[in-house]
Image 1 (spheres, helix red, strand yellow):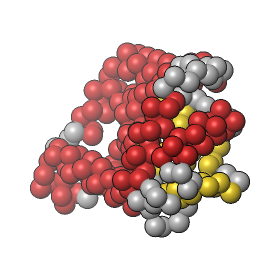
Image 2 (tube, rainbow, N blue to C red):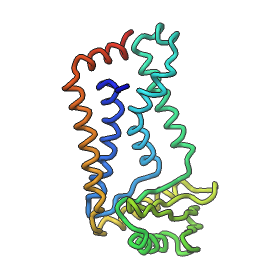
Image 3 (tube, one colour):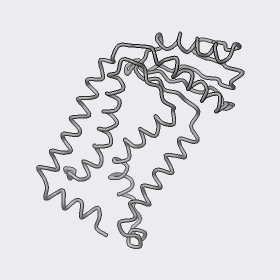
Length: 218
């Protein structure tokens, strides 16, 4: 059983865009820092196509579909986005620094922490900033060369995290690193997914129109 080109494009294009973004970030010669909420939102966007052709279409309520017509897709997508927003709001504070190793980030973070809070102290990979109300630990993903600063404990000061993110971003601005060699692989994969989607739509135009009529049948 093959997937029709319309649903295939809906599923693959957001994933390809996400992988392309990762490839571009990792190809740069400087670290890139983002919040955990933004990182999770980008992942949610990447998975939105798979969710659309998977759970949303499979469990679409038929009674509501007959009542709302094609607007049911807007309702279901809004539900997905609200669910994603809830997950982002309930997640612990986190910062993600792409294209940097633990060894490259640690001295920059230590200097930034001591400047923000003279009472900052380390315990292994754990950092406590009592004046900012921030407690975190470092988690390194060596395969993709990025480091996450993850909140330790439930008592966290959001304003303190924002100050830390702002100052760390400023401190990392002049830092230059080697491009991640895996960036090329990410770019190739993203372009392959886009090419597959476009090729299938061009080669199977009849199935494309039929699938569009099935999805938007109301």
